[in-house]
Length: 301
Ligand SMILES: [Zn+2]
Image (cartoon, rainbow, N blue to C red):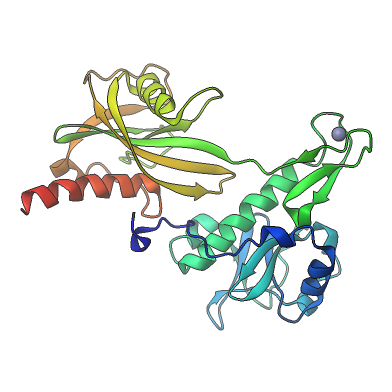
């Protein structure tokens, strides 16, 4: 996949500088520096200003005293600046004089690629910290470690280091000649269909997960499975792994009841008013668009 086709939220725009995470002196200097920048995360949202328009990264002197520095998360070097995420608590949105907090799902459609990548990183880590307050082994409290890139159990006889989790999920466009398989969940907007997706289970390869999910949700057996691309999806911690697959059977049954409907659609169908396609920032949409273009390329020869 070319750089131009990078998925929203993806791209190594932040130099994660893993070696700095345990360098206390460097981190202390970076924190106090005028060069450091802070991504405020309030209610899982990000600060966007009106004048000038664009996202707001705070400088050290703008941090409120309510923000405990030990809860800072070092993200890496972003645009030459040491950059940290900071979770802001409280019912009322802070920094009103600077802008408004907005959802990343929306911001993903408008942000420059490097900011989308930075915010996805920040969102996933802030949410992970909030879900790992206690050690899962001994039940003691856990504190941030490695500059916010891990947590450490405070019970000295345990001392377990807990690492951020990433949940792999497969998403697959199944094709049968000039038709592709799309399904819809009941909660989605009327008429919207998308590619088949589901979480990888313990003990499965990605290909196994593709074959199982497609069968469970649609009764379709697939043969060849081909990797396409991947997208971080920090809602809250998924890594979407995109595939295409060739159908070996065609009779649809909604075996596990996860889908409200599933159908075969032609390219002509997908260019009409029905179905409505997945959101533009999603890997699902990229899989559908890629499939549409693949036939255009053949036809254009
Ligand atoms: Zn413990």
